[in-house]
Image 1 (cartoon, rainbow, N blue to C red):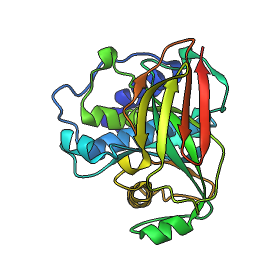
Image 2 (image 1 turned 180 degrees about the vertical axis):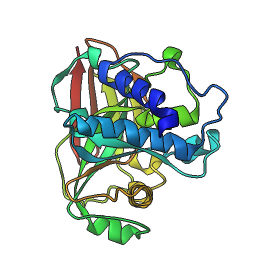
Image 3 (image 1 turned 120 degrees about the vertical axis):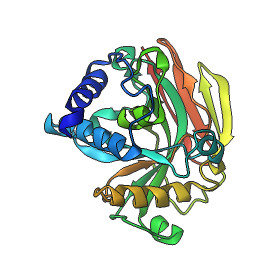
Length: 254
């Protein structure tokens, strides 16, 4: 990765210190494999500083978004323990550059899951499911970026909050949800927005993570993707999401 060492350092510092950075691929010349290599190397620096891998997040799990971006597959990023925010807590705005939030369904795995698996095999690896919120935060100046730049920037993943865990025996294929800011509903949707069924997102996570040589592990969390469009968030706001049958999850940005 010597050719990209400067970019790796720039992106790592941007996430670490919540700093804006200029685009580095304005002509969209960077390949997606190289973008993922940059992401991997940037996250490796966090692990060297003592952070611990706790899972993966899926992106572009909406068919419409995939078509809009000219993609035939999802994108994904890596989660570390330092990214997990306490449910119900006050989260400093200073952690982020351009924070937005989106409602998610989270999976907790009880055993490894790797490669091309069926939906039944994926479900058998799930210990529990929970409502979740992901804070996505592109670090690029003026919120402008190319697709490879998004991937290199850990798919814009910055933080996540998980609510109470529930049995995966619950049919979670089409659960209604409402995300609110200061008690006012800003997004209403369903888990069916996630590839038609969130389980398909978990199947995809098993495939792409194994292809990267990092198969999903027992104890990992998989964020299945945004089930509704992301909303900008600002200091002083309380962000919450209630999901049918699974309760609520929330935090305050301060």
